[in-house]
Amino acid sequence: EDIVNDLTALVKSKNCGPILIRLSWHDAGVFSVGAKPGGCPNAVMRFTDAGEGTFGANAGLPSVAVGLLAPIAEKYVDQEKAISNADLWVLAANVSIEVMGGPAVPTRFGRKDAKSSAESVEGQEGRLPDGDKGLDHLRAIFYPKGFDDKDIVALSGAHSVGSCHGDRSGFEGPWTEDPLRFDNSYFKEMTSKQYAAETTAAGCPQHRHSGTGTIMLESDLALLSDTAFKAHVDTYVQDKEAFFADFVRAWVKLQELGCTDLRETL
Image (tube, rainbow, N blue to C red; front, side, top):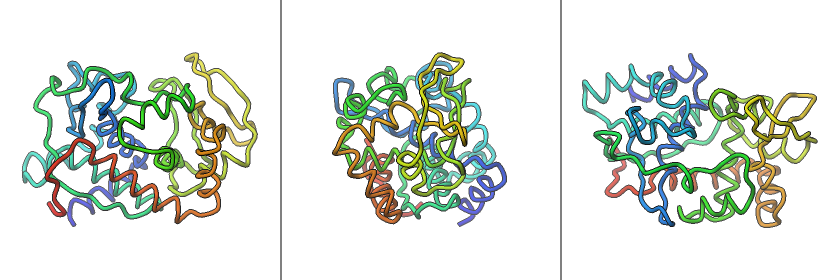
């Protein structure tokens, strides 16, 4: 209860929910059983001498997100030994989702922390999705993790919160008009707005709505280009609770990839 209260206070005071969600996603999302097997949520981004802490896809996470959590980690991980960093990152993301108006996400515990950068996977390619690619790429990334088309669309709905930063990803702008509100607005805006193609200062292709400044990436608009994906988008436009239910199921699965012997309580 104390750790949840401290995380809640952090998210509310710093408006940092989106980057804490991204931290958990990128920690767990390197898992694959494809051509490059392995990976698990182990908080290895704490180390920035090599490995995942240096991946371009993780820009801003070791410095900003891990830094925001540092006082809480010092209290509950280092001093009280109550939780691992890997579990803390999962819990922080799940608290963030609920604080920003999203569903309650159950958290299980027992993830083991990496002891050095040597426990990283070999690289981000083939493990984490690229925002400038389309539906074939999304399936190639997510299918080897055990996800289907519905899962891909539901997980993409996390783009209802947060913004892209040119100095991190090369993309620039928020996906939705209220990037601190976790709901189904990502799907509503995607299907109701007209976006114009543009290239960012970093040379990345994206699409922007001129009236509001919100954006969509190639990987976002790919959800509209395939009938299987589009069917789920249409469902989530009309039914926020259906989106929440499917998101929680897929998100918990993501956070537990490569994990064994997890427990219900700390």
